[in-house]
Image 1 (cartoon, rainbow over the protein chains, first blue to last red):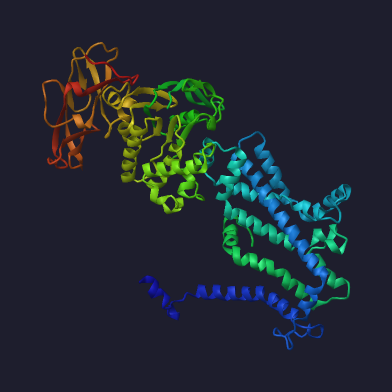
Image 2: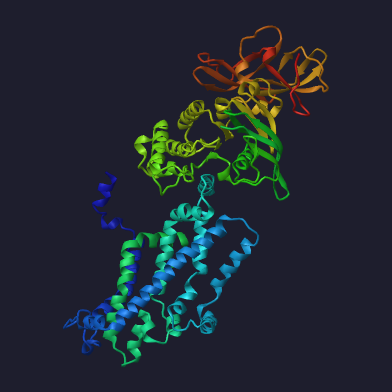
Length: 283
Length: 356
């Protein structure tokens, strides 16, 4: 009855002013967020002559850019490169971050706290400071211009380890002890018992890692030299330097590149929201 | 089935000793309850038997074999936890089958075992359900099923009923007891609830501050508590303890009333006279015993009997009157307890004194 009553709408006089302000702010925020995406999509449907015509709905929409980009073997290659890098780094993070996080959360051993602090302290070092040592390392090991070169700095992250440790701490010891009595070894306990219990955290970690690597630009730009190894963001940026700035191509590439992100978000948004809520992350 | 022996068992955490060299021998097929207040070391003792806590000193033997350094999985025991510890991502059948993880039985044999156990525990209709779709009692039955399925040498229960509501707790208590009668498997049950201990145990082990105070059958503990702690801990409502001063051939009660007891061989003049509320009644039997008078402060009507709290000389004493006789608050009431229903303790040592 209450639900029925409230769903019939409230008289305007009962809407609190605070609500109106909140809705207005949210609306403005929404417009600010959506406008660039709309322009990206709109520009991708224009030809070069219309790019600086700022109408959202193109005067003469065309799919030529898409057929050109998708027909260009380089774009497909970059897309695959990005996919390889993002998937492998994500799997690696899900595996290793949770393994280390679990160990730090559930085992008592000498130096545990120091190790945790050491891992955590690396979060305070900005990426810009790490790029040079990474580059020197990659250069000395012969990893420049290779998939491994792009991936190695992100195969395990302090943030992921910290996130997983916090989640594993919430897993009651009784579960693990029951499994220990039932005869599982420690690795199997982690894999079969603990991991399924932190699925929301794993999903959140996987999503953030995937998105972070999918959109990564700075490090792949530095470590790759041959166009065959470019990831999508690096490849797209090359449209801007090679033959002046081809906005319609860049926007078409960006629109296609957004698809995996959108698909992931549509399917896993409840995990993203839960992950953000539980981990106190910024979105 | 197995015997379990604890020999001078010690547990230390750093400088703190939480279990002080306890000795306990549990017979094959016995149902032993470790009972005591929080922090008395009962759960730690159970976890040492399970192998989940390292032993700081002494020896644990299961069926004569020293298991001090054996992993939990090699001790052939099964444990039921307070929080059930059934896995939320598995169905009831998968949870029960998990107890057979190391078993070399074929898949169909495992399935059959799971079905047998489920039938015993009334879970047959729930096998494909997830724990989230079960009630508290059903979850605890699944946990027991997982423990039962592999036919262990002993069951260890770590406060398995404390998360259930009062009605379910009573029901599960009976179910566990019935199961024990049927299977005859040695069981060690930890609880802080003396009613659970009294109703389930073959023998009760009363623990306090990491030490065993008394071991005995429920009735032995009720009738012959060795000290004030056990006397107050066992029995509900708790035993009344009235300070008295001993003199030749009897004692003077220091609260309102009198006590006449044939008593000798006490080394102290200050004693505590104990009387259980159920023994403190309005009708006097014989000339000897305890008599207390006071004003009725609280009346608890239970139907079969009525508990009466009377106040005298600043002390509250609980007695009982027949169920249909409900005294008025503020009324003056005199209660008596027969001499053979009284308990005596040394005030200084809190140990029981033997009456003759």
